[in-house]
Image (cartoon, rainbow, N blue to C red):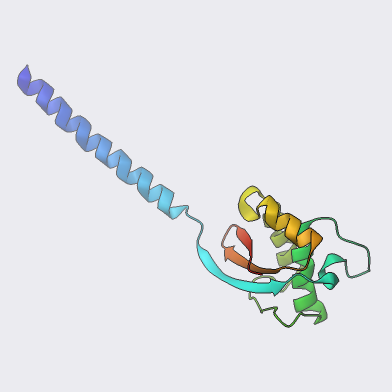
Length: 134
């Protein structure tokens, strides 16, 4: 019997190690790939839509900043180019990602809505993260 228990334990350890390897591989394959970042000043012109009405959310303001940069050529001196948000559809996706949980802290949202901060936007394949630089 001692031999059977030892053999069973060895088999259990091998199967457990195999399952762990598969789980770790799946987790790393689903990790969100970092694509790059850009900086932008969220100024007064980014606080209103192209047709003049005031915007309500920080996500809308960051999206408007990218529309001002790519579509309208109305940039602030600190704005940087990005290769991800040139089309309306891409900016719409940006706004959706900004509305998700971890994209911006409540403090970052308040700073954007109530001021004209310089932000950094980190772009990942499936998400974005916004932080205040200045």
